[in-house]
Each structure stands twice: as C-alpha cells, then as structure tokens.
Image (cartoon, rainbow over the protein chains, first blue to last red):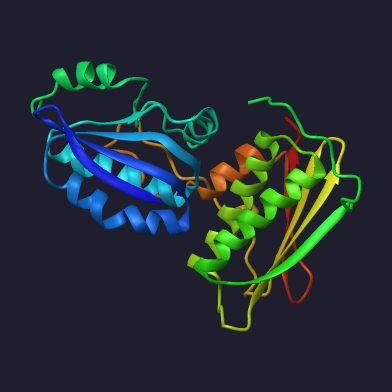
Length: 116
Length: 149
C-alpha cells in the first residue's frame, strides 16, 4: 500500500491510496491518514488504485471521516473500483462514506461545507 | 460484478490446502495463495475476490481476537472448486470461537453515529452463500461457500 497526500485546490486535501487496503495496508495508512483527518478541512480519498479492501481498511476510513466531520469537514471517496464499491455497499457505508466519480464532483460537494 | 472466467487449468486439483502461521505477514501470503488457486480453478475475478475477502476477515478475526492464541497455533485454509463456486474451510487451533454467532453492529445513519469497526463478519455474511461453524474438539472449523459470479 502506498499513500500520497497532496493539495486539492485551496481548501481540501487529496489522499491517494494505491494497493491493498488489508491488514498490512491499513497499518501503512493509519498514521498519515489520521494526521490529515485531524488537520481540519475537506478530504478526498482517491481510491482508484485500491484493488482490495477489507474491514480493517474500512475501519480507518470511517475513523478518518469521523475526525473530519468533527472539524466540520467532509470526506469523499473518489472512484473506487466496482469490487471495492461493492464491499462498501455490503458493509452498509454507501450513504456514510460518499462516493464521487470525479474531482469536479468532489469540489462541488465540498463547496457546501464550512471549511471549503 | 460478472466477468469472464478463465478456463480451469487441466492439472488443477479439486481441492487445495495450505497451513499458515498466525501473524500479519501471513495474511498477504494467504491472499496471494487464494488468488493463485482461484485462478487455477477457473473462477472469475469476482468469485475469487469474495473468497479472498472472507478469508481475510476470518484471519483478521483470529489475529485480533484469537482466544488463548500462542505461537504454535496455525490456520489451515482449504479451497474446493465446484461448478457453482468455491468452497472454503478455515480451520484454526485457537480457543473455541463461533463467528456465526457474532451479532452485526448497528449501523448509524450518519458518520457521527456509525460504528468504527465490527464489519468483518457482516462482509463474510454478505459474500458467503453458506457460513457454518463447528468445533471438532481441538480446532475451530468454519466453512463457507462463495457462489460463482
């Protein structure tokens, strides 16, 4: 698992994940993702390069989204693969972790939040 | 998602079994092994994904919650190919634990209400057509069937 953090415009962060979000991958993202989530502001997680996700990976995404929400921000997932999307749906998260299909869609969603 | 299934390899056996140590490094080894075996069975990518996910969840459960786990404990995964999918037997030597009787967490309606964890067995129930458990006196034996997709 690789994690890269960059700016998304002036008011949001982009976190790009590549690889398997399994027990090992979750260990890799835990600290940097928590740091981004705790810094206030909106966050887009680019999931296009994630080819596998298990519940431990979901746990870190939910923890990050909770921290971001506490800071009045929003977290969205960018374009997960169909199989990863299905895992999120089966886990009951399709309403809780919004999925967007483009950066433009993420920016539109962020535009309505206080920290945008 | 339906996808084209590769033809089963002619020399692929009907069942494959392998034993692993119980640690985080072994999770990747199990996953890679299931991918290889699933491909040799001729199962679709979606079917193999379901098998990988269910075993990853059961394995993570043992790593995180294995009752009385010691360094000598092992898991053994057996995969069986059939026309209607992949059968899985997941055997561990830890203390008695029945994953089929773990209640699913109550899902919140917002991120504030959502539980942080506890979704592993929800995923197993969602992906496995059958999910059963028995204890043979020494080992936990969890069996699953991933339907062909």
